[in-house]
Amino acid sequence: MGSCVDEKDVLAEARALCRDNLVKQTMLDNKLATSFGLRVCFSVEIPLIARRAGYSAVLMNLEHTPMGIDAVRDISVSCLNVGITPMVVVPTGEAQWISRCLDAGAQAIIVPHVNTVEEAQTCVNAAKYPPLGRRSLTMVQPMMQYASHILYQIVSDVVNDAVQILPMIETTEGLANVEAIAAVPGVDALLIGCADLSVELGIGGNYDASEFHEALGKIASAAQKASVDGRRVFVGLGGMEMRPDLIQYFAKRYSNIRYVRFTMAGRDVSMLAAGMSRQVASMKEISATL
Image 1: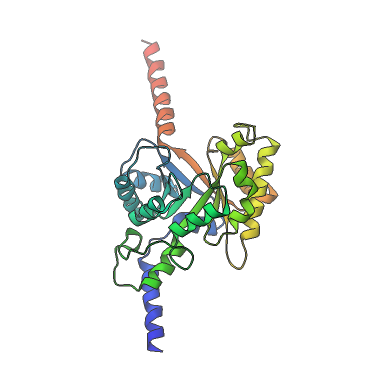
Image 2: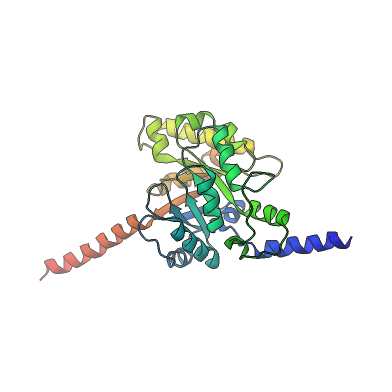
C-alpha cells in the first residue's frame, strides 16, 4: 500500500515539474491555438514578446531556415520559462531530428510530407517513449526542469502526455492515406500544409476552391474517426494566416471541420516587412510636405 501511495506522490511531483504544453491545453479547451514563426529573428527574447502578445507557441522552422540545434535549445528553454509552447518543424521524420529537438526542450514537433502509415509510425517512434514509441530516454531534459530523480516509467508517461507530434498532410498521397495516418497511436494532430496541398491538387493557392474544401473535410473526418476512447486528434492549418476569414470558417462554420484548433498565425519576417513599410510610408508623407 505504501509503495502505491509513494508512486502516486512521485507521479504528482512529475506532473508538477513538467512544463505545461499551452498549444495542447488550448486545443483541449476547444479554442484556437496559434504560433508565431521564426525565419530571421533567432533571439531568446522572442518567446517573451510572443507570450505577451497572446500566442500559444513559438515555431522554429528547421526545414526552411538555417537555424541550428543550439538556437532551438535556447529558444525552447526560454519558451518553457514563460509558459509558451516551443514548436519545431523538422526537415524529416527521422529520430536524429525529432528526438534531438525534444531533448533540447521542444514540446511539439511538426513533420513535413508525411505520406504513409509507415512514415507516421516513424515519427511517433522518434517522439514518444515506450510503449507508444521508441524514443531513447534521457532523464535530464528542460521540459522536466532537469529533474533526474524520478522513475523512468513515470517520466515516460508524463512526457508522452505533454509532447505533441503533428504529421503534415500536404500531398495527394498523404491525403489518400490520411485516415490510416490519423489512426496511428501517438499522432496528436494533422497539420495541413495548405500551399503545398493546393499545388498538388492543381489549384495552387486557391483556398476558396471546392477541391481544397473537400480535402480539408476529408482530413477533419479522419481526425474525427481517430478520436475514440478518450483520444483526441486535432487538425491544424499551416500557411493560411493571410486568410483569417477562412481560418474562422474552417474552425467554426464548416460542419466537418470542428476539429480545426491550431493555426500558424504569422512570422517575424513578414511582420517586420509590413511594419517597416507602414512606418516608412508615414515618414514619406511628412517628407512630401517639406
